[in-house]
Image 1 (cartoon, rainbow, N blue to C red):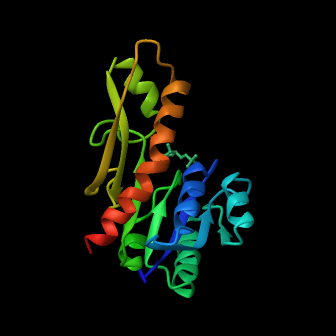
Image 2: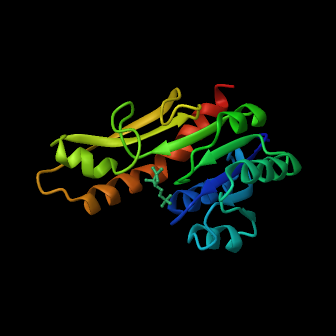
Length: 189
Ligand code: GRF
């Protein structure tokens, strides 16, 4: 039997990647089990997916980042979390948090990193008339969207592309890419 890695997923909103990770974790041969969902937003739609699947959730507002991160770390230790997957989590974790957690943290970003780090990626991609974009799963370091790339996938950007159509296209591919990248990463350990 595959050893399942205790995983926490951090979200801030819609949670479609969380949903795909929950589905992945439920597969017989999946390498992760999601023990905890963390959100900085009490009305994040994604929290509903956690509740539906009876996964514990922890909400902390990040009004005081230091205190929020301390409280999250307590939950992570308590639930013996070995891996964090950021999935649309809109807060930047401090260097201190990353060092204290000690275990891997990975993120999914909707661009072909190292291009288009940060926010509003699709808008910038369209403005620059790029013909390809995509998504990247990478390790998290204290430098924004800059850690080692685990897996990346491209999509074509068409002439008639809009921010909405590109977002939709990339999200669809992310739902396949994130589980694949997790598998790849865990099997490389
Ligand atoms: C995704 O596009 C992800 O790449 C980015 O934020 C978005 C989250 O979407 N980091 P969702 O909340 O998983 O639907």
